[in-house]
Length: 218
Image (cartoon, rainbow, N blue to C red; front, top):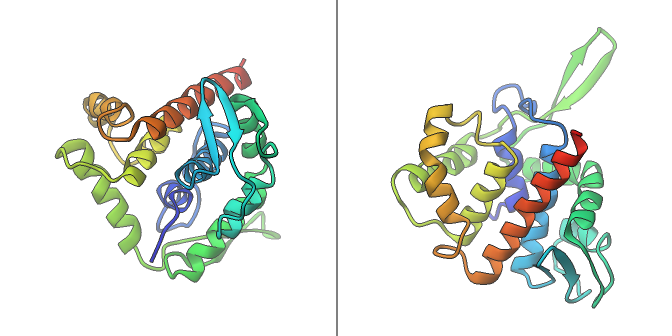
């Protein structure tokens, strides 16, 4: 069963029991999902991130319905756009894409859909774990990589980089553990583990998120 990077981001953000999203800084989850989908397009060589610019390399379908919807939001083939502008635009549209990711996780048997009633009359959907095996495995792999020195796959390195910059690791580890893992995280998102292009792309994403979110808070 293949789990998208963006779906793994959601699994890290969800409380397995309540099915609710953990409290996160404003818009961080939107940027994490947008960044994860964008990195999957980098993997598929549909887009390139370089020196602060995003460029669409091909308009060809990806074979993934969610990624194709993401592609429709990007500049036309050959055109470039400031990565900060593109990422902000993509993050603004994750409200339409996130339900599709959650629906796919339900179909895959990872989550189940429920609802939460509040103020007697209102309900909101929840997505508790149907099986904790997938989420447990993701967390286990992250621990092995950060604290036991296991070499990650490219997908795992991307997930850790995105989860780190978007504050998704804070409910997995104590502040002390995160501080101890910081050198390892920084190593993972440089050149030794990820190939040159992917490393540059993730670095561009991190710089863009930090700059954009900082500007939002001003």
